[in-house]
Amino acid sequence: MLYEQFSRAEINPRLPESQTSIRLRAYARPNRQLVGDQQGRWAVLILPGGGYSMTAPSEAEPVALAFLNAGMQAFVLDYSVAPDRFPQALLEAAACVDFIHRNADKYGIRRVAVCGFSAGGHLAGCLSNLFDLPVIGETLALQPGDVWPDAAILCYPVITTREPFGSVKSFSNLLGKTAQRPPALSLETSVTPSNPPTFLWCTYNDGTVPMENSLLYANALRGCNVSCELHIYADGPHAMGLATPDSAFDETRVNPHAATWHGLCVEWLKGLQ
Image 1: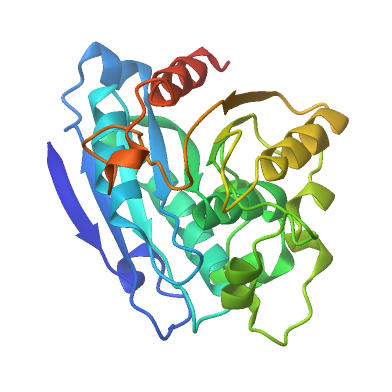
Image 2: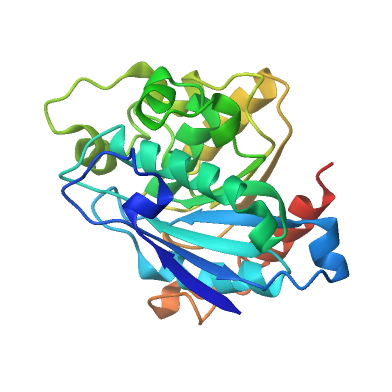
């Protein structure tokens, strides 16, 4: 396995400085021109959750290793969080997709997916919806096609700013407590037919980010005729990660049934044309 870390300047020297540090970590198989390398592997850019106040370790390296074990190349972005504000984290995620594309030959990569958890799911959804936002191209000197993900994986994502389902804490960290909330950041309102195919999962009794967030997004995708797969598990709290002992930070987040999401997701990714 190759393990590498990349700084802000290495990702894209045009990325603005932030008040919080960032890093991109790669967990990859060497490109040895095996059949899997020649066919081209998926790369998965993992965006951990944390309410835009931190990035959760339980949703970072364990998830990367799971995708690596499934024959994919994995990258983890510890993106900027509060007190940094929108669009800082979006610029960083966009720059990382471009970085992975630029290093496709090195890693034997054919396509790039984004995989976000909770607030990281909101960030992945922002990139899926708003990849052509002018500020991305103007700041990073990139084209929309450079940062468009080929697939999106949203795990119990924060989606809406609307009551009663919106995550007040996450949006306060992202925008500031007194900031007006741009309508497009309520992601169910800014889906377009250009969104990538999307896999979502959540739990019926998530008391932190209600399942209605995923339902709203899935319905918006359907309205734009964007391919979508949605799984709602009956039981489980928020922030389950892989829902296995290797990623759960307490016993309540170990759930063998919910843990099937990852295998289903890998199967879904490999089936995309």
